[in-house]
Image (cartoon, rainbow, N blue to C red; front, side):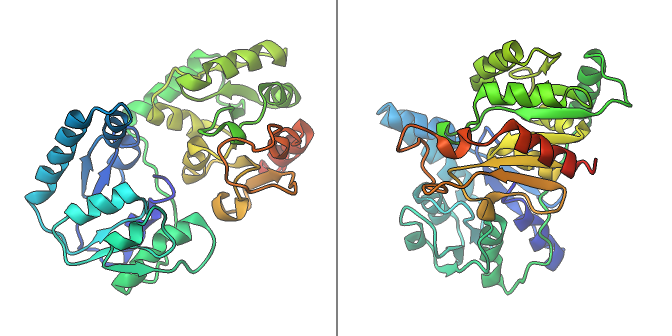
Length: 330
């Protein structure tokens, strides 16, 4: 969602009077809801739809699908831009009343078969891939900034949480995000713990993440031996964003909060192994990367095929801390 956000900004920059409707799943909806470039948000629970399919609950899945069809049947669009590039998103684009369905030539799962036009990305980075769909509209994107807007309530939550945790305005915060969506992208909790220990003299340490990272957070707290504020599982996405915005630096693997922080212009240190930083790393000299390239690096597999996770486990806390201070200009 964050990587896709420059498409809306670039489209509005080229066509200020256009109206953008964004169709989004329920989980990430808040990340686009407050985007000033998006005029309308349609929330459709792709997550529930896929859950029903996996459980062979076809009647419930069909009901959700028909609700989406009904939502789209009442309007017409100049173009449908598929910037996810999957079979399901291709099927959704096919439901839109439009003469133009524009996608990416490299998309997976037979997605290009649903498109009337496809485009080729000018470069390897993921934002360049997503922005390439605008080429079919005659737009050469000059605007490439990721956008994330934090509403006042989430900002207030972050202020209250940080103050309530005993952090003063003069103290700097390092946010550590231990979890990712793939086991292969995870850095071990004991190495996060050592990183917290090495940073504690100059930073207040806050852990952020979702409920699936609760055990990781507890392990980091136990092994660090230094004061840690554990916010894992205690925030919504936007409340977490509020905390990320207050940080001096965010340390994370290749996962959503990393790009949320980059969109908020908070310095980041990203840990890469199975995915390629050339494609995914946040750009800019205040966003550092740590990668210990192995022969099998950038395999793009959710689980290590060798069972060792060497590409991630061989990254040292010392290398991460060095990047932290470099990004913070210390």
